Amino acid sequence: MTHTLVYPITSLHNSAGHLEIDGCDVVDLAAVFGTPLLVYEEETIRDQCRRYMAAFREHTDDFEVIYASKAFSSVAVDQLVMEEGLSIDVSSGGEYHMARVAGFPAERIFFHGNNKTREELEYALCGGVGSVVVDSFQELALLEEIVAGRGGSQRILLRITPGVEAHTHSFIETGQVDSKFGFGLADGVALEAIREALAAPHLDLVGLHAHIGSQIFKLDAFRRAIGILVKLIGQAHAGFGFECRCLNVGGGLGIRYTVEDAPSSIGDYATVKVEGVREEMAAMGLPMPRVLIEPGRSIVGKAGITAYTVGTIKEIPRVRTYVSVDGGMSDNIRPMLYDAQYLGMLANKADEPADTKVTVAGKHCESGDILIRDAVIQRPEPGDILVMPATGAYCFAMASNYNGSPRPAVVLVRQGQARVIIERETYADLVAKHRPLRD
Ligand code: LLP
Image (cartoon, rainbow, N blue to C red; front, side, top):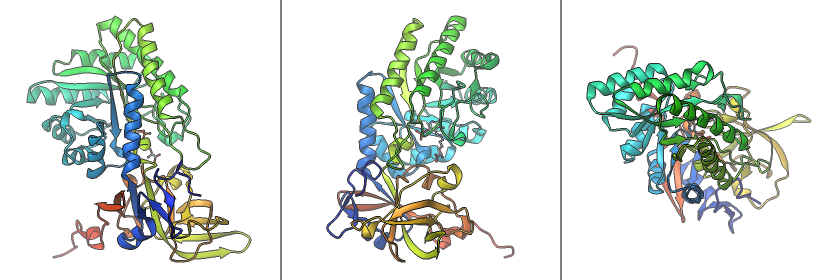
């Protein structure tokens, strides 16, 4: 049984006994497009966008769902989320560029980053970027200088680090005191940043932002962060008349990678975020701001699967069996970087019993290049198509050319049709920017 809790929502086993996603047989996709192959199901992405929009609409008319494109930045998916009415968060000039090529209206773009360069800021401002989320005093000064030079005014938010621990992997926790991101609360730093932003003649401080981490299951940390942010808003209001029109409470909702994972629902997440802001603002006697959220993983994570071809199988008696596939850490660094757990299955043997314990290894020259330790899958043979579900977020986005690996192709499937949205890199691409030692 393929769990649609973890796999894209239309996944099923077809009459050939293969894994099928929205009418596309994954074994056929692998044959046509090659492997490793990233397959996104359009329906799951749209469904997640709609769930977010509907859940927030239940609580307020004044909200904005902003896709954190770092999870998977591509022209086609940027277009898809745009069609669903989302705004977009970009964390670099490059992601900004992709969103613009996708046709995203500049005013719906939020520009993030703890070290935006002058060139990146100028590029985004030149295109009319909607909001810049300012991360440091240097950036505040730089932005004021650039905007003053160009004329006009720029909408900004300030990124606040609320000092909240988020119960997730420390590499993806961002709201704690000891963080490279944003303005901390200690020693009045955040308050001072608000004061300076309000005093900057060419900057329009519309609100605050906080993102406390990613792959978060329990909602209490979000609620605590909101309490802390609103207390700061109250102080800044009392101190220098700050009016918070927008409160961006970040992304971070976790998803299921395995059947045991138990993330909160989008509905509960929306309740905590909107009602949390409402309660805290009311307690402070302040008007309700627009509530902004920035989900990334939970928009695209479940929509994507990766298909590999099984190659070498090495059985070490009484130890383990290594099943090597034609990708690995170059297309999914998450198991190595975060100890991320994934499921696996053989798409061409979907109906056969999953009764064989193996370790799925990548093809790279490192012992640590392991995709799944102790996966229980159907009996593997060379040539089988091994699928890992829930690889839609932060896999292709963090892919590399390690060991001279061309990055995989990405296809989007919908109602029996598959469309290439990112071409597979070629060997020629690998050397396209290289120049020889001598002419
Ligand atoms: N907003 C900001 C400012 C962020 O830094 C992030 C993620 C998000 C929103 C979206 O968070 P999400 O809804 O996706 O949890 N590479 C790591 C995840 C890094 C997250 C970085 N920031 C991973 O593979 O788990």
